[in-house]
Length: 501
Image 1 (tube, one colour):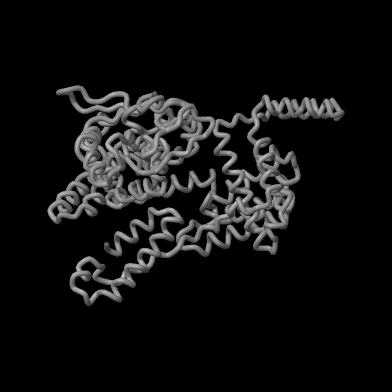
Image 2 (image 1 turned 120 degrees about the horizontal axis):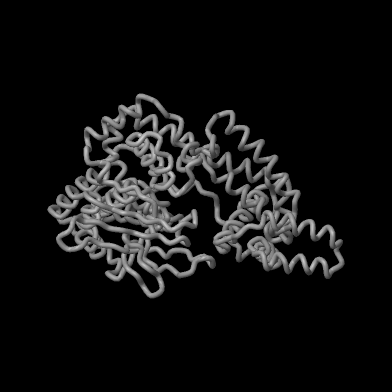
């Protein structure tokens, strides 16, 4: 056990697991101090004292089981109303008419609601978000001197004073924490406020709270962001500009990203050989994870997927859950794989098809036939695991999902750590989600003005593609980038088939 391994585990662990890890490190240090002089034990103890991993700066958890039953019942009723569909909403309007409310007023509201009626595909996820938002307010209310044992009404948490206190606390904690994004660079606060507005409007039937939220959002988030020029297009344009500047300014970096799957795979293969030569299973597991990152990069460069789609990719079916892998290489044919993600799996509610061909397909083939089975053998994750990236987690199921996904998946934080282990080889720290920007910029460098193609690859509209990526038309740097890419990779346009699904 080394400090590097402790830090890696800590970075992937949940809050609960990180707490257990800190206790384990303290225990090992205590053993080392007491028993290092006993030769039989010293060989099994760390050569040096280990540093205890720092705790997370994330907010404290709220134990809902300790809150008054009346408050929990009030939240459940409001959350059910907030996620209600059109039929439930209609029943509520009829009940108001039967109770004697002015029919003209009720019908006017019905007309307005029909125009704005939301269709929640993920009601369970929405309910979870509303509960997290109420917990966020509850922490601020408690910090201001409130006693949770005396809490009875949601209205106590939705005052301007409490909402503003929660906003200030979020900003202060984010800005002070080394492991959290700056509040103005993160979308966390924006999402909290959006969820609060939706919960108040549809669950509490209170129109004053969204108005308060909008004014406080303008004061604490929108105007500061505008002054810093950080959040044009909710941060997307700023991200695109930063990535474009790096790729245009250094065509060599762009060329490395085109070769990212090969570079990462080669580095991982070297590390695997060294780990086996040293007889170190733990080092071999780390190297195999890096090879998994090469597979993830190959898929993202073939067609960028949402991180959740990539993480939950299934190579085999189980009961009612279909596989995403629908085509594998034929014998004696060039390797080629095809994946399909159904509409219920994608954010845009459109089915997406992904082709992996040529050298990218060879990396995927090696993973499936050689390295993935070895990874499962060393980690004990079960040979019946259906996921391309086998983990130990259990995916959340929303009532809007038609099937229950099986267990054995990577946790989001662990998958991000796997991805970054590969990105560090290439030298450009972008998340799996931001790979869509890298691919869009590379496509436009190779095929200037092909916004329709970009929109097809990214599953958005041509208008969005132009707005996000259309600021470099006619620039010589795009031509320079194209020339550099094709000089390094003359077969690039043949390797990647960017076609509509």
